[in-house]
Length: 83
View: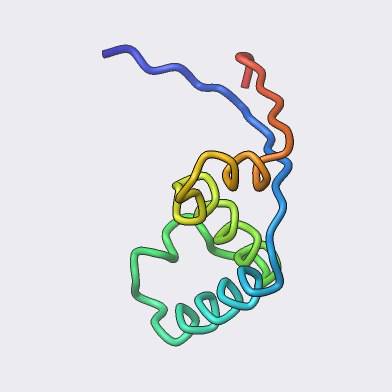
């Protein structure tokens, strides 16, 4: 199977509760430095890690239990094939 690389930028929204949950998750991960979570995240700030966690959960469907809510989280997407 041939793979392709595409660079995509998402504009998302999130609630205060989702932000606080992501902050708590990152704080918990800080207590476990050997977890798989940390692969590729060396040197990232807590703010970056929190936003990445929110984006991961939005794009993975954790917050998308119905189609109309999903549409409210992902506001915009720009993609390019030359990454």
